[in-house]
Length: 106
Image 1 (spheres, rainbow, N blue to C red):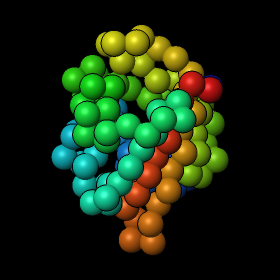
Image 2 (image 1 turned 90 degrees about the vertical axis):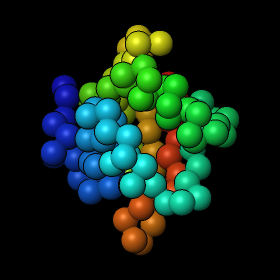
Image 3 (image 1 turned 45 degrees about the horizontal axis):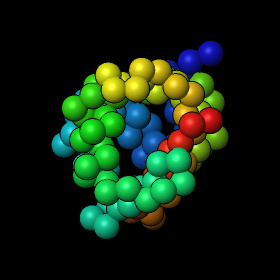
Image 4 (image 1 turned 180 degrees about the horizontal axis):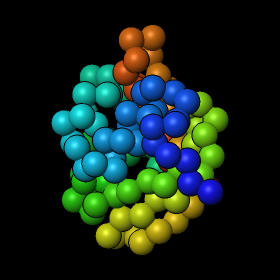
């Protein structure tokens, strides 16, 4: 069962999913703290390179299946890899910016 983006419980996570699905790089980058980091399948990645390759240039899209506040399970698809079940977790700072996100296959 897919959870509508507007119904996601954490505002920063909700905005992250909305920006990914809208392919809105400016809104996405505005959500991140200046020193934000990320990992994919347990390995730290270059945030700018990864987001360009895995989200924006490959038309990434998230369909959220479970919402636990700052952690999600989603069916993620892009033009490079097709669709896969993924997990996402987020560190959100007191100012509302995301300072780290981690993703990988669920």
